Image (cartoon, rainbow, N blue to C red; front, side, top):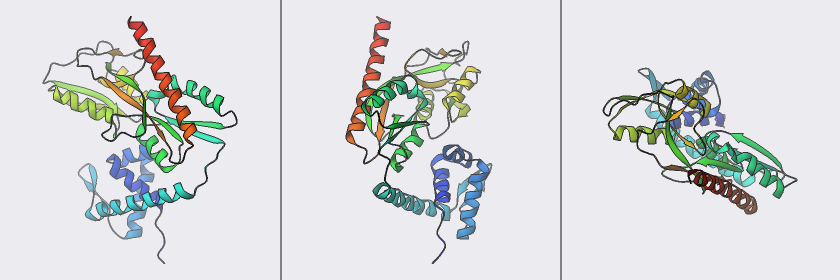
Length: 292
């Protein structure tokens, strides 16, 4: 029998395909870029085939690499289904994930509700990006996750919404239409980034991504440093060191969604949905009263 493939190496290769590069895959997997490169080299050595090759300053999958990624996805999906069926979850622990955007103000409230409903259960929280959180729920590593929507195929249940605003450093000047404009954004994959790029291109701007980060703090810091404009969701005032850019068309809202692990008790999911929905309704009410 041939030696089995390392599933971690398969996950790394699929992450490169999903994120579009070694560095982004490293960020998504919380690994160093040399480790990601090593995983690919070990796979290629094991298979005696080249899967990824240099393409100018970047890289691209070979024909064998593209075929292998398809098969790797199938194998990883079967592995995840097996875990879902047979891994015993800890009934005395609830693991909850949230994006940085949704966490502010929400987690203390959600924590209080869940502790009141399940006083003997240990609650564990994780802050991450929506794509990573959704994947973790699918794999059973998280019980619940509060994520941003805005995708072609929505996941979970809608529990609220956040207003999207264009922000930049105070004094930042918007270029005339048809001129260049610098965008500060999250690293791919990111629905907010796609939305901003698409809208600015529609308005006739020549858009370039001047800075990108895998965290909200990084995006805010780049915008505060005057590197460009950012499209971000807020439920309260714009953070210090930034100003709302009102010369561009408004972008509406983005939905906030709750994703639950398959097999999670319906009472736990319902309690979380009600708590989060109440939080966003009260937030909207406060904003309306402030306007009035």
